[in-house]
Image 1 (cartoon, rainbow, N blue to C red):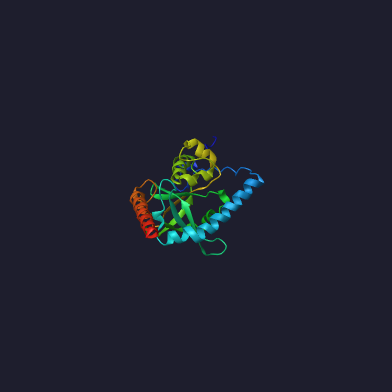
Image 2 (image 1 turned 90 degrees about the vertical axis):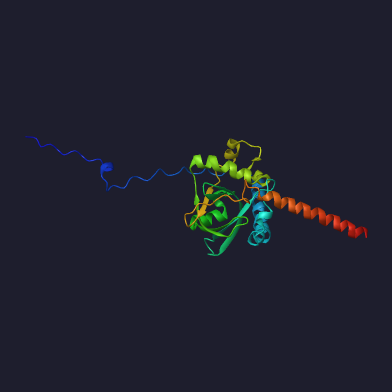
Length: 235
């Protein structure tokens, strides 16, 4: 009599079998080729932001004054502190951001070669400083899910207001599709509190109204100052 071979068990039915991981996220598109002139402009802008941030914006953020700068015309910024992958020293970078889904979201505007992004790839532990809030120990994670990018990036680009035009279009008037077409090579990074808590949206974040009274106060003080100066000059 011919022996009957036992059926081959499906590995998926074995509770000891570890299920396959979810598919790898799609790769980002390679940065488009650029002319020597555009490359020179890009290099110059990097140098400008390097020193402008170091001696201008970073001190403003660390002094707790960033909430006075955010508005729908100039956009909003947070301060992200990474650990240098070579130096091991803290590196501070002001970035446009939004708060959504319990986390802050930022983009590496110069693509995968962006220095702070390379630091995050090496060590995801960062310190996040949002306007009018204390520093937050956080973890930075790149998100490549196309549906998330399609939902977050347009809102993020628009929160940068006029400076957001550096992506290649004016986000305030561009469609979502146009914005996404400008940044297929730009990493999107989610920064969430390291303790696992959800990050709430604050009044001084993009979409909040904390900027209204601050700007009214600044304009009022400026007007009074100009009037006082005129009286002094006339006297």
